[in-house]
Amino acid sequence: MSQKSYISAQGVYLGTFINAEPPEGAVEVPQQPFAGSTWDGEAWSVQGPTGAAINAERDRRLGTTFTFAGKSYDCDTASLARITGAATLAGFAMGAGAAAGNLRWHGGAADFTWIAADNTLTTMDAQTCFAFGNAAATNQSAHIFAGRTVKAMDPIPADYTDDKYWP
Image 1 (cartoon, rainbow, N blue to C red):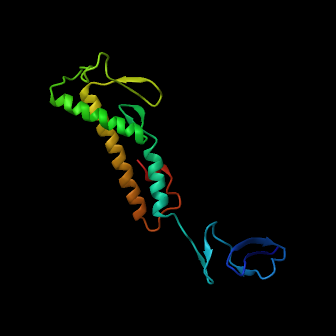
Image 2: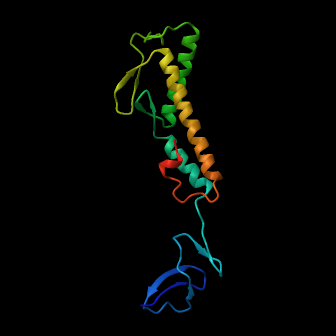
């Protein structure tokens, strides 16, 4: 059995042919290592993941959830803005003397609660809400620096989306 790979005269990979005649004008080359690699006339050039691809993976992960006190919470852009706002108010309330355990530190008529990703309610005093905001910020920072670490790898691993590279 004869197996040969070919590119067109324009350098486009045509495929690997088994016991078949290649298209007219095709040039025999070593088998393409993987989709996306290009032939430079002498060897295959492997185009790996780019910094933009790493940023996209980082941003995808940042828009999912993070864990705080054993529960998952949404962390998309809108959720993060709400978390930041609540944590800021909690910090002001703490500065004004809000006591630990006071669930009405925000000035409302009901206990302060946050909705977790599983749609359950979590009550939070000002200290807990402030720590919640800190956890969200820490999650953001950890992902940003993990992305930077992956982009600095030479070469960038093809499996850069694997959880082992991310917090």
